[in-house]
Length: 284
Length: 248
Image 1 (cartoon, rainbow over the protein chains, first blue to last red):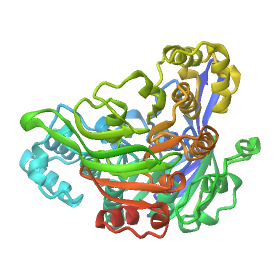
Image 2: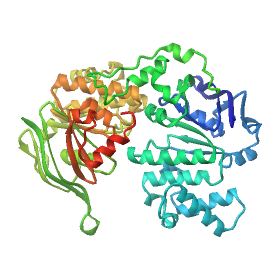
Image 3: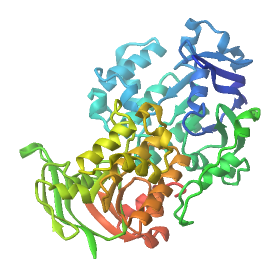
Image 4: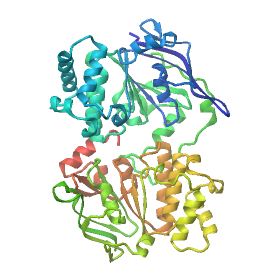
């Protein structure tokens, strides 16, 4: 079942040197699956995620044939209707919880606010639901965390709180933009397995944006590889290591590996043709 | 013959009941021309060890010996000719209003070199930057180019030990490969000794011959890279770290 259908998405920024295309003709569908988008900085992966939620500010321009969610084209919705989509239907978790949580509100107040925006309810009920949300992301002493301020939390805790907050309204789609890049490897694993459990048990769709090929290969079902604003290759995540596009191969080969020691790492040689070729469709 | 020896190093911040022990009783030795890695999670004290060696941590005790010279509390001038450091974030470690030429020129001047002009050109050459980058400002450079400038600045003093604090973790993997290759070449050409901090086991496995695993301010295990590759860690924490390194 298709939750989200993106056709021919472009993100453009007018600059003094002319128009810069950050995303160029990206198409994909998202079902109840974990879809990874990988690429290097500047490849347009984050812009794709933001464009879906119409979070690109002017002068940036978002264009697409359609971005369909439940039979509605998100690009044609009014700003008011769009607010009913953001958070309620599609939620987003950003890289660094330090910048996503309000530093002068306790965690509890922020969760309660999120809950009451989504549901008409009293504070008592909202409090109870917030504690449950924290418990669902494996936070043990939820009552204490409710009273704490974000700076009193570690990075891993902060990211779990963000995930709890994003899931309170029960969205169908979660866009996670480098959700674990600021975390230690051991914490990274925990946060990912929490996301995985929640997404699977609720039957949500997940768009997982990351620069880390190994992580995506391990965690996602399907992967789009982006280069210079285009999707250059689509593959099943468990087959990522058999990818054929020279860019994907180049990225994989430039990673140092413990099991294959070499004196020199391979350096990626960029071919201008990669950015010229039309975007590969990521339709399932 | 050891180039760097650390014995019973303690580093702490604050005093009295606010005292935090960042490094507790750390000891290791790095041979001349060797590359030694420090791994562990954030807050385990790995960067603090580097900062204590360069003199950026004020409160420490224990013994640090560089090239058979024990370090004093106040670092002497020749120390900085021997030991230089490259920091994690090339965006933060270069002065935004100094051109590449000014950054390298000033460093060379401070180290008392005369032929600054030729040396700047040579340094750019060494780190694989074209001469046209010489009069650019940091914001006109990519992340990888900036890290090359930071490495050139560290090389300006003609040091014998380079302390590398996560030198590639802010960079894309393709750029990381270029910088790691550059560091390998420089070590061979200039006969350098490296101490490298990283959270990425694969990077340390690629660059270093031996490594120390840190947890909660202590070194829990020192192992060689063959043991790392064979995933033969002894301490339970090192085993967990190996398990968690996806695909590495």
